[in-house]
Length: 455
Image 1: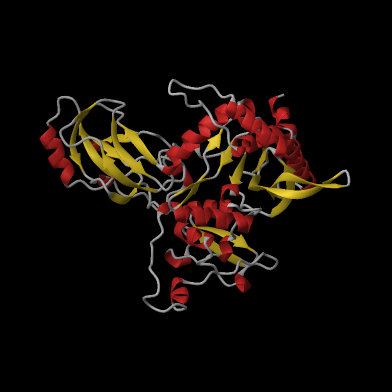
Image 2: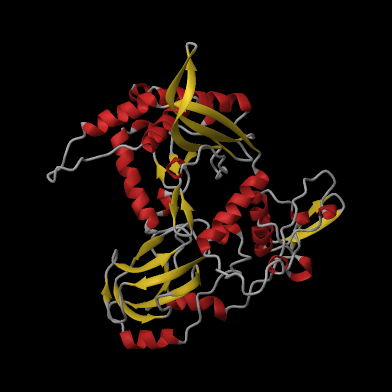
């Protein structure tokens, strides 16, 4: 029986992906575990493995195709003993995999679970739903808010709750004004929102952004080039817009004297063991010390090592530190897991590997999703200090500026010192002012006395 190879879901939020490259061609024999294709998501390029044995009878989605929906049939596999030509001929005119509902309207429970291998189903089973009568559609759900009633789909309600947007403020584009998932996605960027007067009394208003037409009208035709957004840039825009609109930020700044750190770094790098080519096995950066100091600081102030959820506070046992890495078209935050337990040289090696694979879009979802806090360092660009936007589910993020020689007063005398400014952004729902001050204070002690990180 022919087996349909479906577009896999490579992360919990993935709805579409680009089929970057086929590593097998029609007629090739594949075994379970063979890498058959490369899929691009908004964050990474990942290899997809076959989960069944057989011969590729027909490739339905050519490489280079963009925005292929999750669970669409991308190829057909002929099983052992099957006629490959017959399986391929039968697949040529076959429709795409049936879904329980349109992708934008599927309830949360129907979303595919994250997996690194494409889901496969027998072709006969995939075609079966088409022969059976469609299930009756439930009446649109409604949410009451005061005197107003808002009709919405289950997925739209979940997305709106996660984004912290009142359903009553969203313009619905579904039947009879029903709010559907794409309406919520537009609302995250400020579009598709009703005027503030339509919001319930006392609800905070979000100013709608200018439309594309309004913006283009401000500039002379031909004086600009329109560069379409890719998936990564859209995801960054949606997540950070939602963050600043729904997470109450506050900021704490401190100056750190890193003279001892620079001296220790120079001594450690000078004594690093060499490989056969006489090159040092590691070379520590200031950022490696920052990651370690933040990890240990969270262990010393465990009440700040948390994530906010509506049902309760998640108090984390380990310090999983996300580190912002710039890449073409955006940024990504690979995570150093259990950083408090790792040596500086191990952290340095992991970061070099992550940074290289991040820029090549080769990170796996589990390598950049989650984490308990993050570090964003713009010191290499000469930035003195800045504030960073929290990336949920984190409750904090540390923005690190450049180190520079500044005049300081010690014992009544003016001296030169290497000072680095850091700013801690905190989610006020999870971390209060005094608790945030304790955390950045613990970081300052550690970064100014690096030997304490080793204890």
